[in-house]
Image (cartoon, rainbow, N blue to C red; front, side):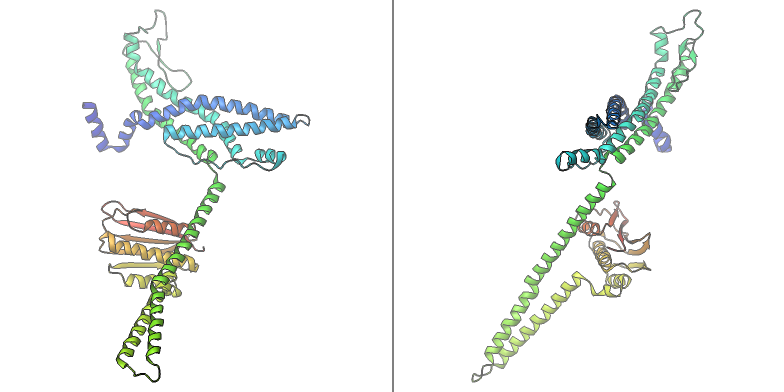
Length: 448
């Protein structure tokens, strides 16, 4: 209890010192130790085997007689590297919770020569081989990091080993009990029981340093996994382009369906009513029949009203596709938007280079949706909208002093904004802690 109270007191007064003292007892530290313990023999065996296979393959490939055998060995080495890479990705995910996306599957070529050529050009296989080979020194560093834990724990038992196990120096022994250190250059010896407490102090310091040594090695290993065992930048880019293309198609289809629905349920109904009213007026104006002026006037009023409402709905529909206020540029359009807001809005714009119409439209609709969220959901008393250009990007930032807690999937319309922004390789960032304030940042390229 006293130790726990002391740790809590330290944590309140010195967060850095608290992190250092708690590190050896954290679950993360022991998970990293387990990762290093398992990764070292796995990397040693896998790396050695891969070196042998690739070396034999490269040597045979240089020979005219055994070139085919060499190519087959190289192919086998690349397949082995892919498998070992998958094992290392799984180990990092199981012990450290670091999930690395699986690289794309191998795509064989046509015919025997095509398949061999595709295997030898397998970029994922070569990058996996690079990681497995790099794992040899990295795994050795991991084993050295574990040595810090071992020496620290062994030194903590020095008084016990002296008193209970009888590890006192023998008569005539000038050295005594060795004081272990992770530095491989030998260390001092203890020849008295009081000196064993110096070993305890050294062990405690070593244990306090051990988690950070382990973490440094693991961080380097995880960087290699992300760089060499993941899909790669080209594959990530292809996947992003496929996703954004699908989003753009879905967005256009949804827009067409909305336009069709609005036309069918709104303007089309109004225009049909206008046509029917005109037919009835035409029937009431037949020569030779008495003219009912009151009825004709009602029919004309009804047709006029339906035509006016149809025009209004068509105008609103066109405005939803491309707001006319954008004809004069995004700053003027946002000024009109903020002027109509029921919440006071401070607007600042700095757009020296006008973006393309598609980017302006997306930025305008993002601002309109976010301002609607401020009015409906935030309870804010004021808001700010800022638009700037920097490094070839259009940056839209909407801030309010409301209650906060905004998140995607809570009826805020943010998922739709994320999809719309991604169609042009943009991004959206939401920072909305409970109690506020809320800041939503949208970054778009200047050209779609």
